[in-house]
Length: 560
Image 1 (spheres, helix red, strand yellow):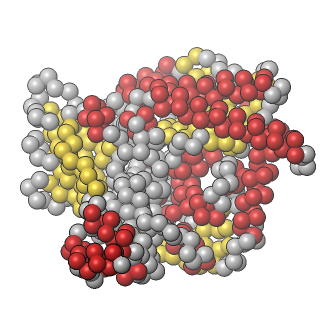
Image 2 (image 1 turned 30 degrees about the vertical axis):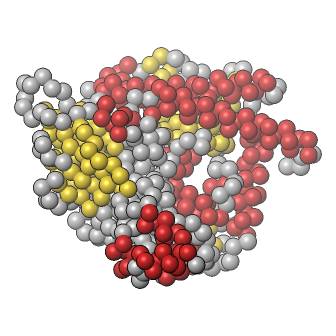
Image 3 (image 1 turned 90 degrees about the vertical axis):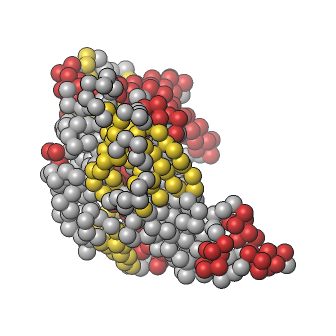
C-alpha cells in the first residue's frame, strides 16, 4: 500500500479514533458489569474485527489471555453461525474452552456490525463470570462436564429478540444468577456501544466500511513485526520449568526457533495432561506465548491479527499445554500464566540482557463460597472472587514490580469492594518483606493477605496456587524469590490446590511468592539497598545473609 504523507496522517487519525472506539467499548463493559472480576479488576477484553474475522484493534484494558484468544474466536463464530444467518440486532456467545478463552468461566460475546444493510465487521468482548455452576471455580474436577454449564456457540439475541430459553437455562444452573445474566447483558451492551461509535466514525470520515483503514493497520503492523524478527539472531534454544502441579510436579518445556519471518515455540517435552483441572487448551498457551515474545521483540507494534501471526505455537496433543476435550481446564490460568516466563527463558539465550528474571507468574485467585454455619439462620450464602498477585522478576534495568499481575495485567479488587460482595473480612493485606529475590536488581515483593468469615459464617475456598514448592528462579547470578505459603490461623499448613474449609472464627493467610533477582547481589547499588532497608523491603538479617553486609557497613558505604 503506497500512501502520501497526507494520506498516512489521515489514516493515523482514523486509527486513533478506532482505538477510542474500542476503549469506550471496554469502559461500557466495566461500568455495567455485575462481577467484581470485571468492574474492579478489568478481567475482560474488547475489540473490533473486519468482515473476515481479523482483529484490527483491541482496548488497552484487558488481559492477554482474553485478547489473544478472542483474536481467533471470531472465526469460529463465523463458521458455526454462518454469515448468511447473521442479521442486524444479533448477538452470539459461547464459553467453549476450545473456541473461546480456555475455560467455562469466560464468556465471549460477538456482535455483527452492519452499515447500510451490509455486514462490515464484528465487535467482540470477553469477561470472567463469578460462577458457571458445577464444582465452582477450582481445580478438583476430573472432566469438563463437572466444571459447569457448557454453552456452545449460539445466538443470545436474534434480530433484537433475547433467547429467553438460554437465559432461563443459565439462571437455573449457576449460583449467582443475577450477576451472571447481568454480565452477559453487559457484554452485549458494550459491543453495541462500540458499534454505535463506529457508525459515528464512518459518517465523520465519509466511509462505508473499515476495509481501507483495516488494510492499512494490518499491513503496517505486519511489516513492523517482520522487521523486528528479521533483526534477531537465527538460533534455536530451549528452556524448561518445573512447577508444583496438583499432587505432583509438572514440567513445561519449550524449543524456540527464530526463522526468517516467524518465531516458533514448540512445547514438545511438556508433561502430559493432569487428571485435575490445571490443563491448558492450546489457544490459551498460544495467547500467552505470543504475548511474552511480543513484549520483548515488538512491544510498540499494535496488537492485532497481523502482528500476532508471525508468533507461532505448536504442542503435542494431550500434553498439559494442549489439553483435548473432555479434559478439565477450569484453572488453566495457573500453568498458562507461566508460559511467558517459559518462552522468555529461551529467548534470553538468544537475546541476553533483554529478558526479566522469572516472576511469581500465576495469579493467586481465591474463590470463596461462604455459607451460614447454621441452617435456618436467615443468613444468605455468597460467591466471592479475589485476585492476588505476587512479585515479578527483576527487569534488565529495573527491580521487579511488587504485588503486580504479570502476565495477566488484571487489577486487584479493593478490600472495600470485596467485603461488600459477601460475608468475609480481609484482616490484613500488605507487602511481604524479604520475598523478592536478591540480586543486582531485586525481584518484586509478594504480598500477605489474611481473610476470614464473618460471625455466623464459614467458607470453603478453591485453592489454585503455585510456586509453593518451586520458587521463581533468579537470572545471571540473581537469587530465587521466596516461595508461597498458605496457613490457617492455628498454624495448620494448607494445600496449594483443591477445595478446603475455613471455619467460623478462623482465618487463612496467603503469603504470595516473590520474583527472582537479576545479577549478583554483591553488585547491588548501596543507595538502593539502603532504600530497601528503610522501606522494609528486606530485613537486616537478609542484608547480612544475601548481600554479606551489616547495616553499619551499608550506611558507611552509601555515604562514600
